[in-house]
Length: 133
Image 1: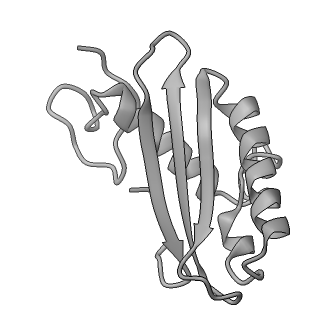
Image 2: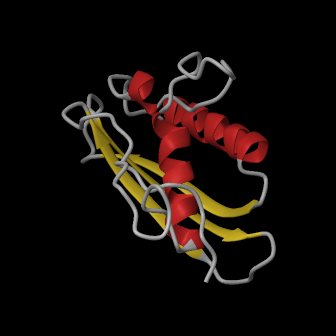
């Protein structure tokens, strides 16, 4: 069993200073969530890092906006998570309303050295607290 980075929120660990991820899927899903929620410019060491889903919440629910989100997402994953092979990404808004303020992101991926497909899903709305967990 391999060990990966620290789990969020940080908690004292038994085998290491902090609890760590012991599953590659959980670690990868943490990286995806972090990439989606970090706004460009928020990461001081790399101002280009992050999709910044927050900035799309109040945009109209139209094809052009969803295409922009998909484009940014693909670019960011290719740069910052190059070991992921993206099979499909879908971005939808809650309901069919043009003014929806909830996004659902679904990413089907596999790791470059594995054939098994994994699914990452995240619902994001204005009421969600932003944090690492």
